[in-house]
Amino acid sequence: MELKRVVVTGLGAITPLGNSIDELWNNLVNGVSGAAPITRFDTTNFKTKFACEVKNYNSNDYFDRKEARKLDMFAQFALIASEQAVQDSGIDTESIDHDQVGVIWGAGIGGIQTFTEEIKGFVNNDGNPRFNPFFIPKMIGDIAAGHISMKYGFRGPNYNTVSACASSTNAIGDAYNLIRLGKAKVFVTGGSEAAICEAGMGGFNSMQALSTRNDDPTTASRPFDKDRDGFVMGEGGAALILEEYEHAVARGAKIYCEVIGSGMTADAHHLTAPHPEGLGAKNVMLMALKDNDTKAEDIDYINVHGTATPRGDIAETLAIKEVFGEHAYKLNISSTKSMTGHLLGAAGAIESIACIMAIKEGIVPPTINHFTDDPEIDPKLNMTYHKAEKREVKAALSNTFGFGGHNASVIFKAI
Image 1 (cartoon, helix red, strand yellow):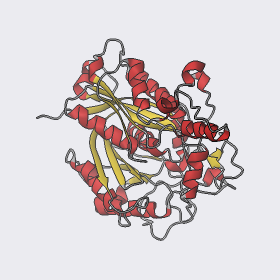
Image 2 (spheres, helix red, strand yellow):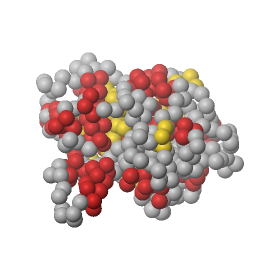
Image 3 (spheres, rainbow, N blue to C red):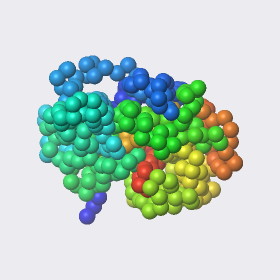
């Protein structure tokens, strides 16, 4: 069976660095931090009092009041990002074969804001179970994919991927593989999260996963820095339109790039910590490269998982050196989480967009907030510290790794 080629024809995003692709990309290239004091709730008693919230967001700007009440914020972000991507792709949503368009969305947590509010309401009333009838439909992770499909009438494969912070990269990989196999012509894919709430922040604080640098939020996300102390929570959504190459050409679509590889592996090591030698990370990059017999030397840029956790950053650099050998020193490597924060299940989608735009614009976004070298991280690796770098990017790889040992990678190539 001949596998189909897959291309990217549309992008959309609502993020801590901007509510459109242009605004997001401009801020990424200029090294802008999205971190600021939390406005969603009272943080007085919380260890971490800052995060990367979506700025200037009012649901009434996008949805009528009745509709907004039925949507958790993670689903709102999904609908906004996917609408931008569909419009960007130029797809005629009326005339397209709706049976050939699917939706695969990634959300590692889903409607945690809804869950938090409903449980608070229950414990604070007289103990009677008075729950909103939309409680469950707002909370469940698959509902974002369902809403996107219902909005446009897309009847192809439709589901949610849940693999913690690897969720949206898994979604992109699944969409890529299903198009290759001829199961659909087009997919709306990506991810969204909205976990900046009491339960989200309190839960990650209890794990000691979050930075507590409350005195200086904008420099708190410090991937690969010796003094990194955890990740900064982010929120938002990002969407890609993946399309069979011949279908895109036939309708005269704008093509950003081609998807040429995906990988999915497990560490099989620890609940939250990565394999100390980066074994799962190494294997997932090798799997993605093998997909189309891509050579390690063909990759110009890696957008790393790089969350600013003490062990995770070291393990990923070890894996890169093992996979790429001497070519590792010719790569540009950067963690855009230093600017966006960590969007959990949506991280892979937003970072895939960073890779795609790097290919399109010939610019690699930086890793900001680097102050002190970590002696356990090879100083000869080019982490693109402080400032964006201009270079031709023919192919870029995006890594995302999640609690539970889930690893996912995807490769994009200029066309």
